[in-house]
Length: 340
Image (cartoon, rainbow, N blue to C red; front, side):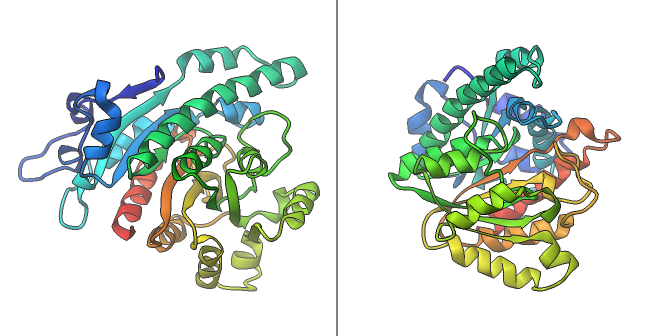
């Protein structure tokens, strides 16, 4: 797996700012000591979670979105590893694996024009290459009995998460997706807007719940497609919950969890759904940070959670250098491991 950059203890500690009298999270996380024996080290690790990043935004560009998702991983790691290690926040639960890096694919994508049909098809092909790498890595982690926590990249990587988990468990899996969009667009070639539709139609995704889609940005054709598969796909809308208040947030979380919880399922969190957060489709309207943290904590308690994916964050688009996006992702990671 040539795209996987496995971090050593030295690599991890370079992110940590030590302080006298304190023990940082990054001083307690575990790591791979022998990359040549990755499979066996994953199996033997006492850490329950395996954290890795995906440094790409090819899928976002192929979906004609704003790039920057390739910057999420380093920002997240810098924040997460400098949180406090304590009985409330235990670094030893996480193995920091490293990141999937695609510099050649990223460079190739920069030369392609999405308004040119032939060049757009080339972008789709690049995304398919990334799919293969994500699938293989998630397969390894889940096969080792661990729970992947995946950071960065576009929502195209949901496909690799779902396929890799499904292949490892030898059965289709369920997914709950906290998102302003369904990402269930046409099977026109791979991009960040159709990871779930491809996974569903290829038999890797069984039940799919989309939490909080925005009514303004859900095409009629997609709604018709969801309706046609209503035994396997369900959703609620942001407007029904937060604007018209036809239902409560708590009731909808329970409803969504009940739809997926009886089989192994993944949690997908698209940062586009969080109000005023630097992401590929940043929005002035959306759920608050605290509502998102509440969601991750509540859903993360379920026994059959198979993975967590935090995607579409684009710290590159922040208006300052305070790393607020990295800190947000760090909160979501620690909320998840405390709940799960």
